[in-house]
Amino acid sequence: MHVEDLLRLESLDLTLLWGKPPLLAREISGVTATDLEEPGRFLQRGEIVLSGLVWWSAADEEATADRFVAALRGAGAAALLAGEETHGRVPEVLVDACRRHGIALLSVPVHTSFRAITDTVYLRQWGDLSRRPAASSYALPENVRDELSRLLAEGADPATLLTRAVAHLGTPPCHLLSATGRTIARTPTARALPAAEASRQLASALRVDPEASPYGQWFLHLPGEVEVPPRMLHEIAEVFAQHRQGALRREAVAQAPARELLALIEAERSAAAPLAAALRACGLPERGPYTVMVMATGAEESTEADALREVLRHLADHRFVTARLAGGGGTAAVIAGADAGVAAGADARGAAAGDTGAGAADSGSPGGSPGGSPGGVVAALKGLWPALRACDEATLPYGGISAPAATPAHLNGALVQARYALTAARRAEGPNLTAVDDLTTLEALLSGLPADVRTAFGIHALGALADGSNPSHRMLLETLDTFLTHNGSWARTAEALHLHVNTVHYRIGRVELLTGRDLARLDHKLDLKAALLCR
Image (cartoon, rainbow, N blue to C red; front, side):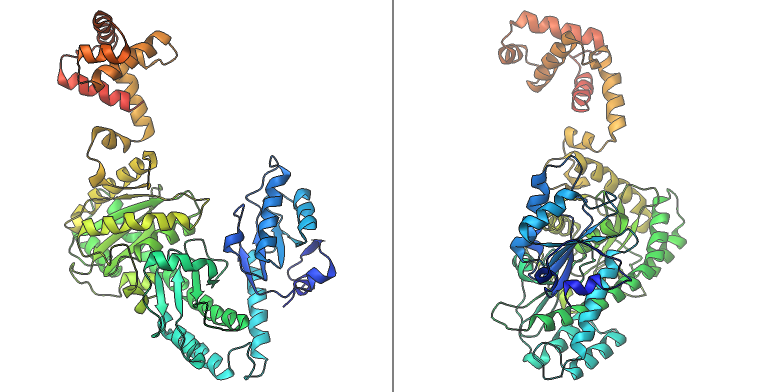
């Protein structure tokens, strides 16, 4: 399929904004949808790029559009298809940048979805390839296509599909990888790849479903020495795109029981029988221990769920379900180890993932597969967090993890803990994933309080000193902070502030008068220390 073929399709209603005939005659190898400002490293040569232009604003300089288009040119993109919905039109500076760099530019009207364009390209390629002679080096043989279609209809697992798709090539080593380097499937000749090593291969791998979220992407990877015609790879990728869509449909069906379970857990007093029945319906054990995790990304609900499920699928031998919290504030997961009580029903982890089989054993999480201990789960998730963050530079995922819940009756408390740890994660520096067991200091404990609670406590505890606009009060707060930092030592406080000891005594006396606290008492010192931390 060529770029100009897209312009001829009335159903897409695309408009050519700039592009010379040689550019419009370029063959399309695939599709990538992106709103990264510099997407070059994620593109494959010959792809058309779909962008909603979220990365651009009217206040941006011309250089912003120029960097974006230069990245497309450097990656060998066939054309840019820019959506009109975000800004109501395609900015003129983008047209100029495409003209300078020699990239054909087509505008996509509001009523045309990116999914429709993607489907058009891959279905057209699929049809073109199927009409070629079976001996062609550019398409799967007809018997292979028939077999893969049958396996898809029968619900075959990814490992079987992958092995059969490349069997006619001598079954070369081949991997199906997730966005965080998790091995979903591999051929018998392919070695196991640790997640970190697999992540480095994604730049040269073929995306299976360009419409998937950054966390839900699948990639087809063959070592560089294995020569397979690009069109054949795209045809194999389409097989897995269809498999993935089927898995998503099954996952959507499985969400109803998961939502019911989380609703029961959110309720402070849920009867034991309904809670046990909900656990069974989700394929989870009726006996603990369980771990509850809550994630928030600020992205749309489906993207957030993709992020949470992707990181949890690295946990070998663990089952989980996820659902959006009814009260808002993120997406939650209930996690159970394989050594917990066995429940009837399908394995929730496999049913949700749609990628059971060999891939589950090859999760490649740091330090090996985590065991059944809750501490192992927390350590594994923290090790995986950088890979999750790398999936989408525009989104920052936050996570909170509870302490172990011994029984279903303790799940509500675990959810409260996970939410508290999530709030602490938003305030912490570093990996943005916090377990409630990490809150071992006063400062860490207070970080889990909602911002309005922290503010109210600080105002009431500090009294008149809470007025930061008063220079005298700011001076007294500095003295108080230094005094408490030096464990109430008058001499060391005076030395740190370059003051006479008598001046320190005077200022602390003023603090006691304005706050109504006695700094000779430990509990009052703790109150004021907490108030300072809550500012």
